[in-house]
Image (cartoon, rainbow, N blue to C red; front, side, top):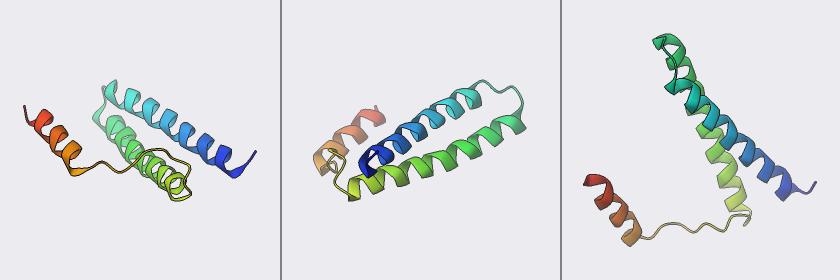
Length: 80
């Protein structure tokens, strides 16, 4: 595997883990267990962001930073 494929796999794995932790946190009846999952979810999101940032830094991501016009439209949408 090449570096790009490895980082892509890392990012995909992190996305899968965050989806699962989010699912489990939403279905917890015990507040302590829910808090534990939310803590894990936060840490996994940090790892996911780090993997994404690394791929972007290496030019392996097609996403471009959002312009101010798009940011304002999203803000307006969520304010409604």
